Length: 278
Image (cartoon, rainbow, N blue to C red):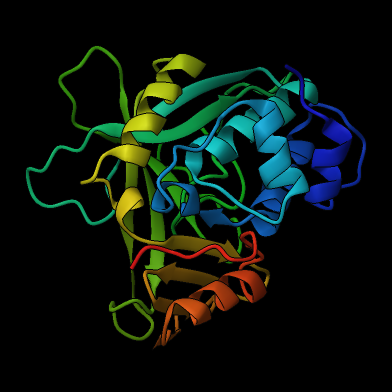
C-alpha cells in the first residue's frame, strides 16, 4: 500500500518543494512532531493498534487521533519514501528511567534516513513519547551536537560486546532538578544499525499493546509538543514544561476531565461515549 502524501502533508501543515533534501527532511520531521500527538489510548482500551497504512491514515491523518512509536514512525517512513528518501528501520532499547544493570528489550522504533549527496544518514524519529524526543533528525556522527531548538541532542558511542557499534541518543536537560543554570546530558535510548522489517514491528507492537505488564497497556500516556511548551499526561497527572525547563503540574479530577484535556489540549478525540478503564 502507498501513502496518500497530499493528505499527510496537509495534516502536518507542510508545504514546500517535494525533494529528498536535508532541509525538507528537517522541516517535515519538525512539522510532524508539532502536529500529531503521541498517545496510547488503543492499548488502554484493550486493542493493539493497526500498523496498516490505510488504518494509520484513518486514525492519524484523517481522524483526530495520535499514536505511539510504531504508528508514528511507520507513517513517517512511508511519507519519507514517497518523498524520495531511502529509509532503514531500526529498533532501540529505551534508557529513560532505567535502573542500574537493568536490560530492557528493544521495543522502540526509529529509522535511518539517507539524503542523496550527504555523507552520512540521519537518525529520524517522530514517535518517541518523551520530552527528550528529537524535534529534527540528527546525523549519525558521534559527539556532534544538534541544536534542534529549544532542545539539544547528541549521539555517543557506548561500550558494547556485539559486532555492531552501539549508539546512544542523549538530550541536554536544564531546570529539571539539575539546579538553576545547570544541566546534564541524559540517555534516551540505545540502538545499533541492524535493519528491521515490518513483521518485526507487528510482533513488538502486539507485545507492547497487550502484555499486562506493559506500561502502555496499563494507563494513559499522551504527549504533545508545541512551539511554546511540551505537554505530558500520565494517568491523571498533567505536566506542562516550558523551553527553559520550568514545569507546571496538576492532577486531573476524574475521567471526564481526562477526556476533556485529551481533546482540548492534546487534540485527541475519542468517539462519544468512550470510557477509559479505571
